[in-house]
Length: 319
Image 1 (cartoon, rainbow, N blue to C red):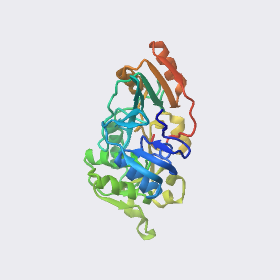
Image 2: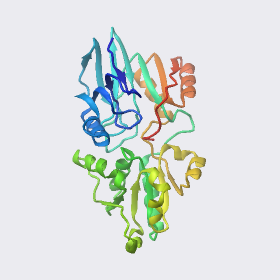
Image 3: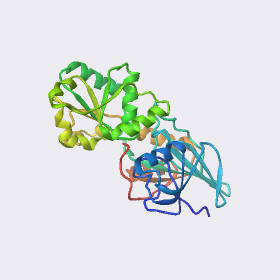
Image 4: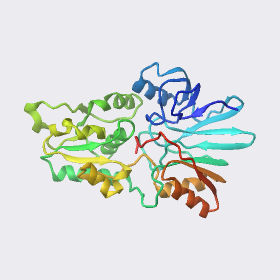
């Protein structure tokens, strides 16, 4: 029944997509159903012909697919992200996709959905992962900018979601100067602005050799991959920062050569994962793409039936 797949890793006839990150949203499906924002993001990333046909899912609006009820609900991960509730014969299964519980000015907040089976991500499904308020991490960044006015601060942030969230958090903290962005962020930042998310003045981070020192004291945001190549060496004595939940692990920051680790994640931490499971009231939990075994064990201790799915093909693009 239903005859559809959620976030399939290979082309299928009918795909339901939770959000626009590349490990969940792939091109080549015959039919794609997703929120309007996710469909637009997929078109930006893959081209207008990323699927044979598309259908917009309206949040909270129940649809029937092959005799199965399907409803999309906000996931709080990135703009357009959704959980997908699937219901038949009185049983409701909710597929979380990626989600977070911290407030995010760039997307709708997560909405707990009562269900019988909750399929949850577990990217940060270990007790060591407890994310501080993102505002505190942004305050640390701004303090460093004040302390080192002669240096550029290069902030590594994933192109979809994290980059725009960091920029908006900087604006909310009172930073009004132009923020310089890598070219890989331009289309998505423009899209967020078109959706009414004010990112303030943005400038391309192109460096004129004669004006290299013009970036002294500036904040530059780019995808993490750009910071490993020659592009990053164009800036004056840069402070390397990286916004990610993985920055909780000092060795990860050291391996990446990160001088200023910023623990800002678009995924739930351990406390949020466990609290969310309780909020859904699910009697059974399936755990996927992340630290699965610890969360399964926690469920068992809590008297909740649980099992790991051991899915492959999902990375941490939006961590």
